[in-house]
Length: 400
Image (cartoon, rainbow, N blue to C red):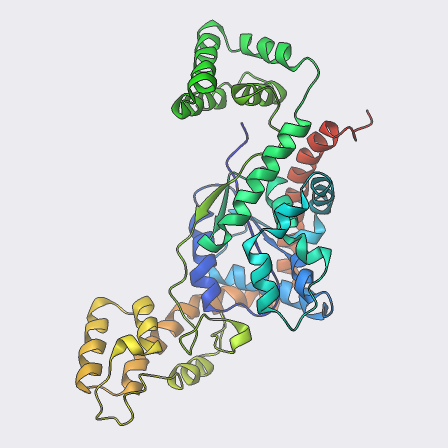
């Protein structure tokens, strides 16, 4: 019905690190070559936990955009924009809040988790409670087909789907819909119309999922249909309502295997990160001072790579031969910890070299980043406005 589209965003709350790269950005770079992608700076989301200290948000936003470009996100393949520069996000968030049950927000697993983990912050605000609803608006406003997430974010995607389903149920009603849908069926031509009706019956009477997918594929190929007739027929397949908002699918991304320098999750709050554009000397110093297997008190003591945080870096950065050299050398005390760390240092520096090169033009001339974002804001806002026209009309707010 609508073009396939990927939407994802990140909060600008500080410098990006290698955990961000291996956990998200590397996937973005792959996806941008496969289908249309919109990647946004979620500055409003940053305010949900940093509302009392917003000074870092604007600076972090521009730094983060440079990091994206340095990592390989390509503005000729993906649309980059800033959330707050597309005010339709806030409008859809508001309108969705009118019909979203409060209990849906309170049951989101990450809500209670973050309340406990961020106990030093006062998070008794609607902004924090409503975070998943704003997140839903960010995606639904672009009628995204896919959202790249880790497993911990799956409840958020399911909630987006429930919100879209509820919205379509409440507001997809149209006077004379049945007759208009049947008139649209006739526009398919006699053969396709007969097939459409057969597939619709198979799905609605027998719950045949394959029939539903076959019918949807047929409608995707029916280029002679107007957009409104296409909406009607997609909705008519499953019930008696238009589909105004699209239910996005989760695109699971592999969780990052890159830990922090101390073996825990790489996080700014733990002080165990390597920045995406870290200086070579700083990379060398940070890796050389990483903790190792506590059993290796002396150089002559044998160790076990499984107990060493450095080994987890080898699993990401080193080839099989190097990993075998590490295992053998560590367990026999044939190599020291500084020797073991050097291939990791070399690999990180090599990985970051093109990032430094790609970042330099934007550091030399910041107006280049601003121009990219200005163009992206325009593209994103045009798409958002198309959705909002349909939303306003469905909710009786078009005043035509």
